[in-house]
Amino acid sequence: MDHSRYDLSFTVDVSGSPHARLKPVPLGDVRLSDEFWEPRREINRKVTLREQYEHLESSGTLDNFRRASGRIEAPFRGMYFADSDVYKWLEAASWTLTANPDPELGEMVERAIDEVEAAQEPDGYINTYFTFEQKRERFTNLRDLHELYCGGHLIQAAIAHHRATGSERLLDVARRFADLVCKTFGPKSEGKLETADGHEEIEMALVELFRETGEHRYLDQARFFLDVRGRGRVSGREYHQDHLPFREQQEITGHAVRATYLNAGAADVYAETGDEDILHALERLWHNMVTKRMYVSGGIGSRYEGEAFGKDHELPNERAYAESCAAIGSVMWSWRMLQITGEARYADLIEHTLYNAVLPGVSLDGRRYFYQNPLADDGTHRRQEWFGCACCPPNIARTLAALPGYFYSTSEGTVWVHLYAEGEANLQGPKVHLRQRTGYPWDGDVEVEVVSGEGEFSLMLRVPAWCEEARIEVNGAEADIPAKPGSYAGIQRRWRPGDTVRLHLPMPVRLLESHPHVLENTGRVAVMRGPILYCAEGADNPDAADLRDVVLTPDAGFSVGPHPELAGMPALHAPASIESLDPGWRGSLYRTRRLPTPNRRPSRLTLVPYLAWANRSPGPMQVWLRSG
Image: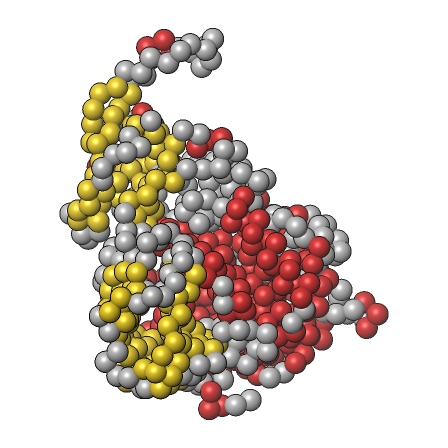
């Protein structure tokens, strides 16, 4: 193992992957100083991670480790996969420590690692649910009890901690467990268990452990778990993505988090092996998801039953499951696809999902969370401080902690800029220091300055798919460079310190409509400005007794202004009307169809960013509004 590499804090290290087009930038080499993301990351560091640690204590999750090590006598508490919440918290805290020395947080991390380390059994096994009551049954119910899922999160936490601090303490725990997995699982002809876990996660963890240690057996094991699925060894069900071998799957189906985690792991396997059948399957599944099974927010998973994808165009709004973890899984998958291909469509979805499907999962003060993220509500769906199944809160925390690593990549003689926010980046290949100045996502002007470093290289700036009239200036002069929506605009030149590129991304308000087969949205529109999805909340629209009666004029002129209750975020205002319900509907659910005779009165509609809804008093919310 190369012990000098710990300061290269890649969240997903494809720097040596032979089939990845792009190379990552270390997390600590990107510094955000914007007014959108960095305040949230500071809340994540100062508030969220500390309060989550307290929840891990009060819920008994950390006590489960103390119980397993014999330090206390107490009953097991929580879900049987609760160990994973500790591991995700450790990963989040470790990525945070990469760029933000924080002695108090560092001490929490060491205390948690001490409990984990003490709970590991001599053969490398660790799972606090199985320590006593279930000890004889380890690895006998992989379909339901998530042993390898928990182990995968342990491995990812250990890698993050090693890359952030250089310490091998948690990494040694993870390697002992991974070695046990390699001894236990494999072909039946070798006397091993020829199956996989019911909840995917171990696949991408093992590939990353291979990248961290150079031990090829971990990559081989990840590929085994990918290949054994779909042969009925887990359940034979779509729910577990076990209905067909991975390379034969045509539609994304089953439990949405499991599906995206599996696909992220498969992308990792492809990046190392170049198995084209894997890549083709990934492209099919991604296309099916974004064209037929994804909400306008980027959320995925339309069914409460099984937390699962539905059929094509099955996208109910108020009953949308759209789990926060599923949105994060989508980002993880698309990030790997972006590194493999360099195609802007994956970066577009990452941006869209981060703003509109991940961020709604946490309150503006960083203390409360959504598990489900519906697109319509009567005022009863509210964020909670914690959950009995607490997978989403630490998952959101680790995503925010690792966020700077998503902004840039490099390739031979090229710098790729994927996301936009005020800040700086020190890049090593090409060796250049860049500074972004922008008010994104509220303002569409982005300036990228070469602060230091010179020489010839290409600067690839993503032109978001939502922007139809982008313009580029180089050193103040209009540049004749193609800026096609949903592509990277490449600027090849010999650069000098002080050179600037300005990307102008006009942000008119846009009205979106659904595919006609999404029947619930017939005659309705969703409203976006730039990358941000908007919604109507009852708190801003007291004139409407029911937001379902609000009608937005298609050519309504929108005005933009700061919202006083939502930290000055831009709100949208437009003339609208409210349709009074025909009195003939009183006491009736159905009737013979009549020609409509609308009874409307003028009103004014206020829309707020969907990412900020449910941060005030409870009330109704609608994303899709009647239009006409």
